[in-house]
Image 1 (cartoon, rainbow, N blue to C red):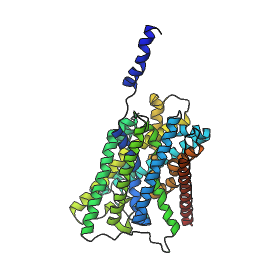
Image 2 (cartoon, one colour):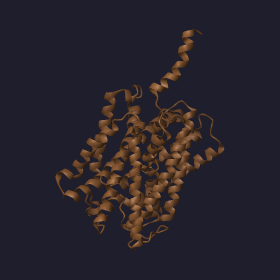
Image 3 (cartoon, helix red, strand yellow):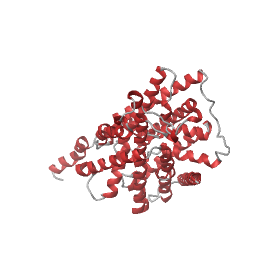
Length: 434
């Protein structure tokens, strides 16, 4: 070995990480994962308590959180046993081109659906909604009256151009860690104020006694209970961001730790807002709980709290948006341009995909006013595939020979539960239309 080679070769691995690779922190990963999980799911959790009752809803939240943890562990284990750095790549190693396409399509459907839901919620907060003919005014309309400039279309357009667009132009997930930290803080503020309002109403005797168990009658059948499952599944589906976040960390094991901390935090937040939201509004609770916060609180201070709750969560949703957009954009690029260079290095392609996705999300949010149908559709189809069916199938296929008997049993149970509950939920929704 020449002196030159002896000097230069060891320097390369020491020199490159300092310039080209800056590892993300565990705390940053926790914030990004928690933000990916919470998203819009928190809005419809209280409505699931109305359907299921408190005890079944609590058990379902815990079970789905635990299954999400298991599925992420499966996914990361097979990722690091192979050569891929994406969800679609892991599916390609196990099932070929068809598996990769299935994963990419599911990520695209799930994430685009969630982005549209986020804009619908923001529109509800800023400009109100009229579910079933009942008018719920937005904050801008309550403050300034009804004008063209605070209409749903114009308010969302301003939000997309001046808030969403600058955030989605970041090219690394780690760059979003501060906005994600603020996002989680806003979610905690939302839960804290809602909890305080519910406890105050409880002490004043203004709350309804929540149902501990589901109430079945001529209007609600046993099978209707399954329609709540997809909502909670969607609320815990963050698997599309596992690889983008995980591969910016220094150690692979840190991603499992980040996911477990985030899942525990989000499960607690979900149950808290579900219980206190149900206490506050009872059976009048809407699929999007923010719509309920437009009611007259009976005092100026109460009205102020209502507005703070709605604004804090609208801001939270705005900060979650770029995280889901990140993985959606990457998957669409991988699907459409598999042989092109890395997306972050091609400015024209990056800007084209970013602007097209924003435009589609905006137009769909204007056309579709209700998030409950989105949750049920996504939770019964693409989200359940990403969260449970695909990771379970990867374990059973076991192309790397690393699955244990226990792994295969858990994976099979996970797939069976996912398929059965989703099939019943879809069938019940279709039957209810007729």
